[in-house]
Image (cartoon, rainbow, N blue to C red; front, side):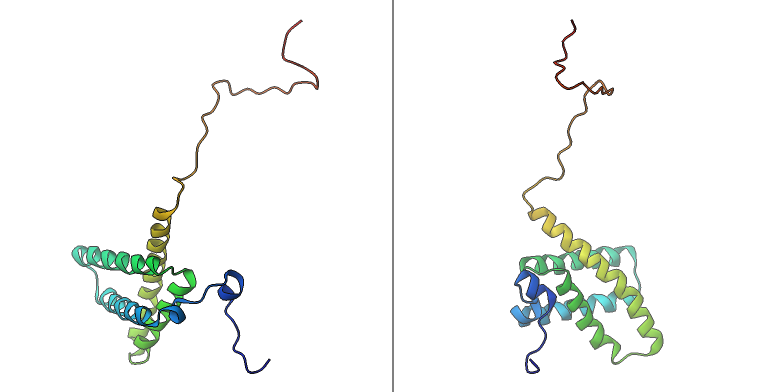
Length: 148
């Protein structure tokens, strides 16, 4: 009992391993790319830079989607990139990384959700047309709707 490491909840409930364990090389590359995005995000955003940042973030989310990553994997990716950044920076810069990192993580999760939504079989909710007559009446049991 004491020699085993605890199994993460996603592995126990879904039977899947984290991306960090399944594909460590790809995970390391994505951590590096995401860390670069964190640096660029912290430096400031012009409209042109913002467009490139969103495009690069979308590419990272596509890579995550192709690898079958989930929300926990995006958090692990963010955590790994932030850990390497926060070890060597000042307190003021740490605050900036934390603020920008939160926004970047939410955007990454949104892009990943869009990736999976594009792959889904359905085309969204099917809306039923409403009947023209909006008044509804309750019929008595055994009533056929015919007038005597």
